[in-house]
Structures are given as structure tokens and as C-alpha cells.
Image (cartoon, rainbow, N blue to C red; front, side, top):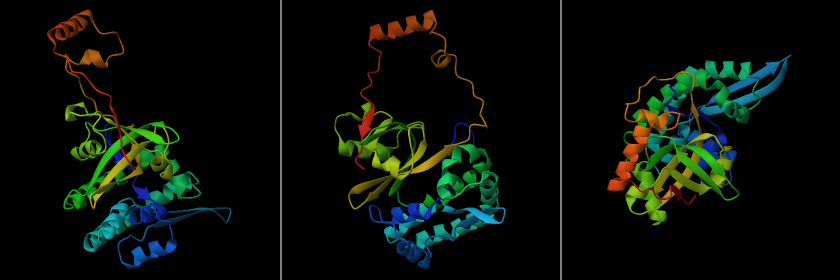
Length: 286
């Protein structure tokens, strides 16, 4: 990954998978066993951390695309779900040694500790993360657009609402359409900003807080949209160099804008060549 690349955390828990299969229902081992019996989840990775002959922790995790397999199974697309699960099994087998080394190096007690350490281990996980994103792009190509994703950063979290800042270059058509269906306060379409407001339950359920990166998933089903959040990561240790055009460089500089740039902006304002930006936070139902 590079500094401009955000990706999903490549592993999830059994709880994450069951919640994706039965949103809003109580999490049960029986449901997960049913998914395993149907071949729509992968075997997973099981790492036990021992010290002095005693068990200090156990991390059980699954490749993140098991979430997609669970959603496909819920939509009765079992063949596609089984294909995803099979590919995820190969992925887990390949990267199990890396997970084991990370668990032992950081003495991680369980999956929650593993996920909470994601910003410390993001660089070590980069090869696995890149492979997983490529696999997701390959497998999702034929999913008929029933699922859309946006990488976001949580910028505000109150008792009832969480504000999400779109991390990518712009909001997808699916997110815009969803926002329009919920509120008309931001019409016309050109006024739609790059922030979304969702129920605070979503980040809390995913153990996410202010400043965290996340993957917002928008699932379309039976005339409704279902939202969920998963942890995401960004590797800041590898940076892509780029050069801004002279026309735009002053706006990204910490110094005050030069006089000639200010004069040019004043001329544009006098001519009416300006863009008025409406409020940029779009409330979404959860």
C-alpha cells in the first residue's frame, strides 16, 4: 500500500461474519456452524500464544471477504458465496505464518487486541492487504452492483450520530443516490458534499472511534439499503511523490496565499465565477 491507499483490515471475527449474515439478530455459534456446514465460510486462522508453558492468548480470525460470502449466502447466492469462501481459505493458508508471527511478537491475547493493533502492524500486513483487495476486485466484478463501498474516516461521534468523511476522490453514485432518497435538503445533486452522518451504533458495533478509518458498506436489498462499517487501514510508511501544478500549489501551502492569487480570486468573485457550496453533511439511516 502507499500513502494514498486505504484498504479494509484483512481479517474479521466470527462475530463479524454472523452479523453480516443476520443483521440485527443475536450472534450465535449455531449460525456460524451452519455457514461452515454449507461451505460459505473459510476455515479461518487459529494462533495460540504461549509463554512459560502457559496459554497467554488465542487469536481466531478469518479473511475479511468472508463478510461478502455471508452477504451472498443471505441473498441465496450460494455458489458465489462458496467460491469466495474457497478463495479465502487459500488466502488464510498463505498468510497464516505472518499472522502467527505478529500475534507472538505483540503478545496479542485475542482478536480484539489484534484488530486494535492494526495501526501498529499495518506495514507488516501490507502484502496480505494488497492481495486481499485484488482478490475482492476480482470476485466482486460479477456481483451486479448490489453492494457498494466507501472508505471513510470517523470525524465526530455523539450519543446518537457519527460523522463520516469520505476518504476517496469523491462520493460514489450509490452513496449519492442513497443520500437523495433520505433527504432533499441537499438538492440539486451538485450540492452533495463528502460527509455522511450515520447512526452512532454502527461505529460502536465495529469498535471504531473518532479518527479511525473504516469501510462503509451500502447493501441494496428489497427496496432498502443496509449500512455497516468495518475497520480499515492505511500504510503511511510508503509515500508516493507527486508535484502539484503551479496553479494549485499555493492552496496546499501553509503560507498565506500570494497577492496575485488573492487578486485573481477577487476578479473571479466580481465576475460571478464562483461556486457556492451547501452544507456537506448528509444524514443516512442505519
